[in-house]
Image (tube, rainbow, N blue to C red; front, side):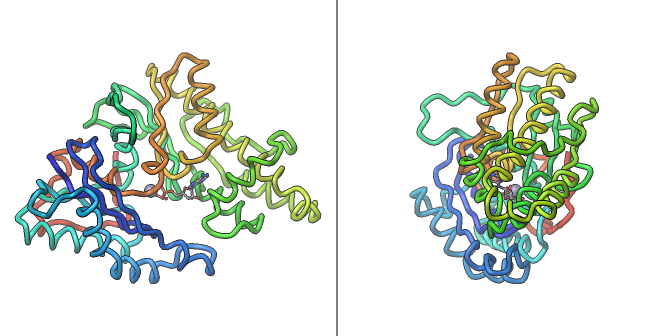
Length: 339
Ligand code: KG4
Ligand code: ZN
């Protein structure tokens, strides 16, 4: 089953062609970073306008790279939420137009399901592809979410924990702004931290040992701000050490809590998903600590961690009837709840 996936929930315009929820024939993404950079964050009106300008070309390119035509498609899948309404509506309108014009089945995909099912996509260039064995635990760490999910089967997911305040990616972006690293902040902080000492400053690790599956990152962000207020000279002299110490705290909490939850819920596989799973330290540490604890650790290929459309096509395939809607019933839901 060949599905065209479309994703426009935030500031990336993306389209992809994926066969049977796993084999990626093309995965195209037009980044809007350059248009939002001068504002230090995503400006919803600009995001919406740029999606409208770009979506047609991005879909055409996805088909061309896959060496396919509209007539080769079996279905179209689109992110319906959560996200920015003005952004979502562009992808949904495009998907609706294609579904009508080509009489194709349509799938309404929750963005978080997309991140989770990125773990079902074959890694580019790797010959063997084994699908994740359920049950497993999935830690979704993105700009808007930090959710711990018990994946009982491809159809049944239980959200067992989440952040009580900031998402992990949000903390990265806010601390990057405090350090003057610009936009987008997470990847810049990741790079800076690689040259710093993660043990230089002992930043707090909230809820690390509370035995729950919830997270909290706003105290950590505030601790970095207080530290910079108390030591203004560190803004210029110790930025790499601060970045590395902040990152060590985030990674420590995420790894400790995910592995603890896996043990308590009797699963032996932990998967990562979402933009922060592109973080070099998190990928490395979870693999190291997970394997030391006898767990299997799954980490999607980098291009499937941050927002992309291949994961949306994969989610549609695995969600099946649960995501299928008549094309005229495709919708935009900025707060689309999920489980
Ligand atoms: O999943 P995503 O692309 O969009 C949302 O659904 O939110 O995640 C974006 C988030 C941003 O907060 C960004 O700073 C963070 O992921 N991020 C990273 C890295 N790459 C992206 N955070 C830390 N290290 C990275 N390498
Ligand atoms: Zn995302």
